[in-house]
Length: 354
DNA sequence: AAAGCGTGGGG
DNA sequence: TCCCCAAGCTT
Image 1: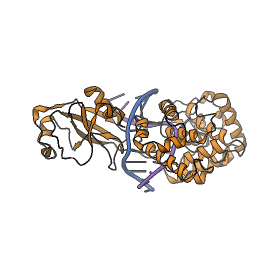
Image 2 (image 1 turned 90 degrees about the vertical axis):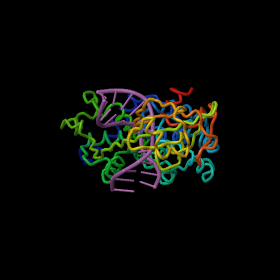
Image 3 (image 1 turned 135 degrees about the horizontal axis):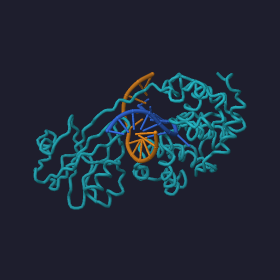
Image 4 (image 1 turned 60 degrees about the vertical axis):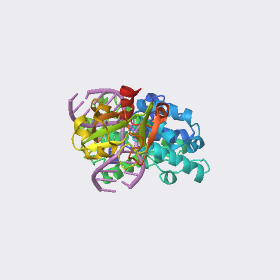
């Protein structure tokens, strides 16, 4: 495989392309491992434009790893609100505590140590080790899969363990010992803005002459990924108990979506329920709700990567003082603004409450 | 090892 | 509208 392109010339060509085409991003040209780590966690499965404002917000709210470690988890989640994959924020916070408590506030310098940290997997460990400490370990992310699979004609499934090993081995063959950071940044940047998923810019590509995909017109079928996410439909019926200017909210704790975020008491059903149908549901009996005190929202369709949530909110204005619920409490509107909430909940609040 | 975990943007 | 995706990690 490596015979198709000389490894030394590949990295030189790539780094040369990178120096001429790189974007000016705020987490480049910083040497603080904390900021590099922060940017890498934010950018997991996230576009640069979407992550950018969060990076600035986190640097401002938590200038050092100590500041982050000392914060309440809910404050961290609140800052992360809207970015999705909230386990990243919980692990970010856990990791900050580990760095402060076990590493006297200094990030470890090697891939092998970094990869043990919560929320830091093979990609992020390689990124920090190379960007912050100059270690020659190759990053392998979605951009790298795409660029290498096309140029070298690798048809392994990138979602399989075997495929990941193949790509990691190749990238580690190609990475030069003297400029590991530039190589890693360059390969990702190349995949991101040159060798794009659709309509790659092959006519002006420095690897055109040796690119397997270009020669065989296989850009659209590389990289190979087998997995298909099956979409699950779920029907959410939220009970929004209102007492003055306060709503009953609770933290999601189940092993499910939005763990750690706040929402309302939820009745999930197998089909969408009208107000009439909801009121006769068994789960509602303990609440002793009067029909005329309930107003229902329109149906929200909230799209997650793997679930479609068909959701209706039922505002209950005359809630009993003692709700038969073991978690949660009434929060004033002011408090609610500060709670970490899924986008769906924020949308409802904006549409019907605030 | 495969499934689960968000959100918003683009073709 | 629908599908694919975007600098992955955890269990």
